[in-house]
Figure (cartoon, one colour):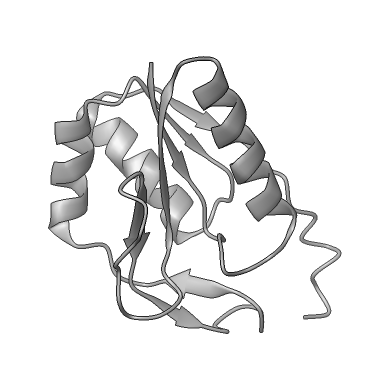
Amino acid sequence: MKIGIFTDTYRPSVNGVVYVTEILRRNFEAAGHEVYIFAPAAGLSSKSDDDHIIRFPAINGVVMDEGNMALFFPPTVLKRIRELEFDVLHFLVPGPVGLMAIYAGNKLDIPVVAEYCTDYFQYAEH
């Protein structure tokens, strides 16, 4: 199965969502699945050393000091999702990148799995 994991927080940030993303990837790959991660970049450059990590240009500290928020989704991203022929899209945070998963799933008729693993009440002070 080919799985796209969409997360609004990823390395270089370090938090629970990043750990969950990495655990999911590791376990899905160990089970024989091919996994791609869609995540914000550490800045405006969308380059990645791993061809299975697709980065979106982002700005640091928009919502929380330690996080990057993707603000721009080039049309080429939807084309790439179509070309990769995913069996399922899985998003971890209902932010901009998570909304991209929902949009792509609806547009391309790909099942979408939602996972909510952040306690926003805990972050209300931030």
